[in-house]
Length: 394
Ligand code: SF4
Ligand code: SF4
Picture 1 (cartoon, rainbow, N blue to C red):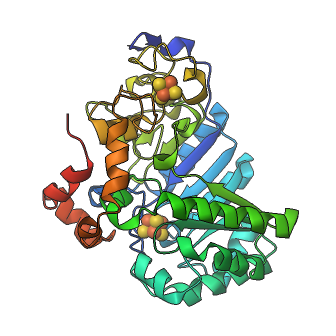
Picture 2: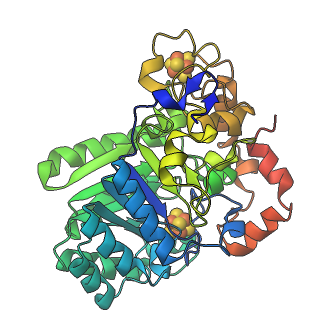
């Protein structure tokens, strides 16, 4: 029986998942200050799906129409069954992408991935300097990443580098692009930090100024002109300095499906921050049921859920009111306009965040790195004050 939710009947849902992101484990040897994983991830590390369950997820999602598979985490290479998953994905006809820090990628494993039909490897890099790389990840991984980049190139994979941009590396854009070019990168994504998970609680330590962003974009454009099509460069503009929000995930439950390490099925990475939404789990629900029938997936489909100013906004088709998680995290109301929008009555929250991030006293507070220990502490109720500085509670 189709569920009815906020006036949207699942029976009228005509979408299908095109992208499946398998967040296969929350374990990770790195401790990035900007990690988008949930701060409470530690509670999901003891009940990871087994190989058989992942193969079933892949099959079910493919039956529904999913064609792109991202294998991510945490660090997916901490699992020893990625080879099996890659092979199954290839048999099923997915275009598969391994999203990795590079830690754990050996000659033996990359050869097995190649043989198994993995299409694409996306490697994260952090800076041109060893010092910043090691600081922001709280690990000594700089040399290893360069070695892994060479290994990826050597196996004939397109070289796809992802660099998260923040205050510590934004002054090095030109040098980062030079390094990418020297490594033979085909694609470079300069992804300005978006503030969710760990990056949200470290926002005052990470957020660059508008002037720094503008300068970084100018340097990127100049570099683009210089290299032309030889290396494609994407510059992902940060939300907080925009006038309008992004069409988050291309719409809630429109194209993307995320299955987390413990089997929760989500329309976006952060969706579990929204209270009173019960997400389906593959241990109890089918992928088809999760997508079409679950109240959580239907909750923000269409526009019936919208409040003003979005409801009567002539631009609502462009952004669908922005990100539901950001709306909740920053205003306490998941049905309100994303406060990034200059038409939102809560835009002042963003303006304050930008000002706070330039306040030397707030900047000086220590970064909370993404570690199991810190996640446990957060789950046990520590750091409540720090969290409440950033999370609005209804
Ligand atoms: S952002 Fe860093 S800490 Fe988070 S999953 Fe990726 S590599 Fe691990
Ligand atoms: S008011 Fe709502 S729908 Fe209109 S532009 Fe802003 S976020 Fe988008």
